[in-house]
Image (cartoon, rainbow, N blue to C red; front, side, top):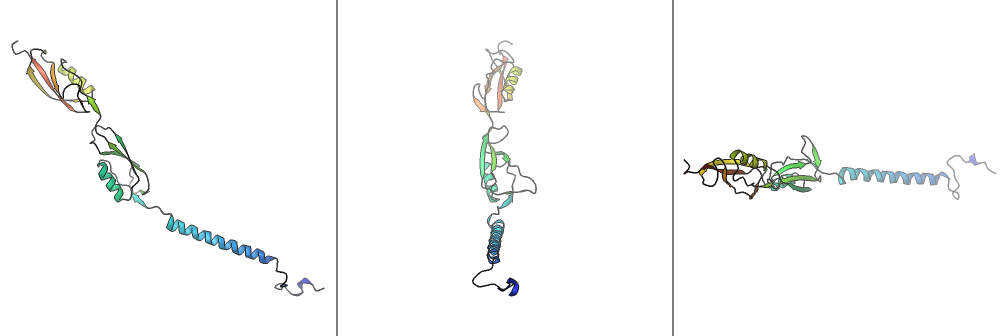
Length: 193
């Protein structure tokens, strides 16, 4: 019988395939699959899954409509609005935003932007300060969140001197917080002099 090494290393019988041929085919298939997976990963990372980013503008102090336009122009369309009562802010004015803009920072344009919009100042009821002294009336109005405006004096037969005859706006009326309330204070009876 001839020896196996007689024909050399590269020789094989055509009826019996070499044992490593299956191993080489499997390695080639695995290498091809790895190359395809790597190509897909690069393509999806560089082209398909990139998210646009933009600098977030500061829209506090703008109206809600202006803020939406400015944000939309930068590509931010995922906007949520919350309303609060706020003294010192006009109705419809943006008083806060989340996230807040940061210098030299860009955010994905699909970031949720929450705008806090003022529904105006809270409302309060004008207290009844008739027959109170001017100081008592001023304290009561201040405690209610209101301010004293003009104080005029009138003669009165019914109300003691230095006491409040009436207010404008009148007692029990609902007004915005920080509204100015004018007082009419009695000079006393004109016949008592």
